[in-house]
Length: 319
Image 1 (cartoon, helix red, strand yellow):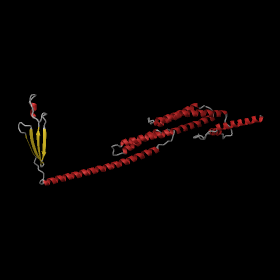
Image 2: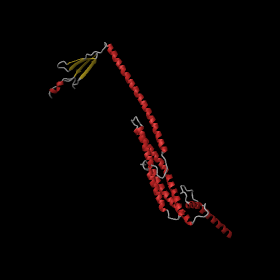
Image 3: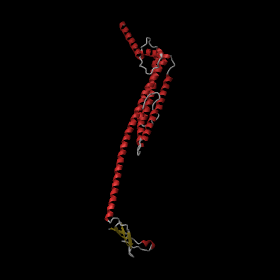
């Protein structure tokens, strides 16, 4: 029984040692301050690489720092999620960089407010964790930044398409669309990052150049069609002139310059006879119209017309 109790105690002690070593091992730190002996020594102790084990105070500070890190990161993640939702739903995405900077500053202020004013090792621990917090938030913002650039690119391309409608020169619309994208993309880059929008800008200019090429081809085809129509009209005019010349030759060298016209209306009738001779053609017109003096006869007067409805008739003969 005594041997069994001793074995159980040894197992418990082994578990405690292993658990403590697992907790004290800290993941590698990015962007750690350079030339800091205290910070380097603190990292070694937390990773279990130093000769001395960390004190209970440093161990408690590690747990508290991790809790603060998780709390601030969760709040920042919720704000990032709301920002992504606004971008996807089509809301205004201008000034994304300023919004991201404000989110990073707010998270840093919250983390700094929860950091205790302890010794150098505790301060170094919170400094490392604060840098990791900023890096994690920046990584979560990058997909939203890419989506923002896509929205600005689509808007610039749409402006370019609208600007070239009915325009022969597309250079001005090209420059305006590119300037629009560059200004909005530059305002979307957070100040604490080195993100670039060169790839999206190159993609935009490439698409606009393709559209420019298609517009130039369409304009060339339209010019060729217009030239063909103009050539056809000139040909028809030449044919008409030749026909007039042949007609003049057939009628005696030149067309008849005399134009004669006459009209006659028999008394007390509605019949009106008229005839004319113009350019070698004779036109005879016979018409039956109501009496022009019907308005002078008053309400008890009468008119002479055709039929009970007092209709007027006209008949033309071309010879």
